[in-house]
Image (cartoon, rainbow, N blue to C red; front, top):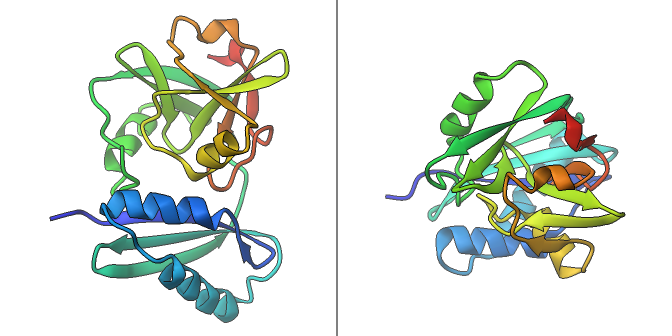
Length: 198
């Protein structure tokens, strides 16, 4: 039986962003097409209940193939990341956006506050515990072709040509200038650090 899944939307001034990409991921996760309307409807009800029509909010929805199970709306705060640690893993344990993040949290909890793991699978750079990764060189942005999870922001940026997918080994990482974290809530440049912090 499939476990509980999670979909996190960015709600900006009352509007849900990048819905086609969320719809596509929900469909991939469930293995079939699934309408996005139940998600938008439940968010709208919660927005009205909380009056969350201004600013940036995280809308976290848990669901299964049977339907939506819960929703949580919280004001968004930018994460405080000061450095990264490369962590080798043996398998992709997060190819779907599972609600159970215990294995991700296990790695994260081993590190000091502000230090974010970058997972390395078979020598290839993948993701952090909560974001996809971009690397920057000469003003151009690239994303590893081996993410753990196909993120909605990553998909959008690839689709519009803002970023390009490349194989990226841990040995090559130092040849880039900066690393950016992206997810549904984060755009390139919002959390960006020099590669020297690894």
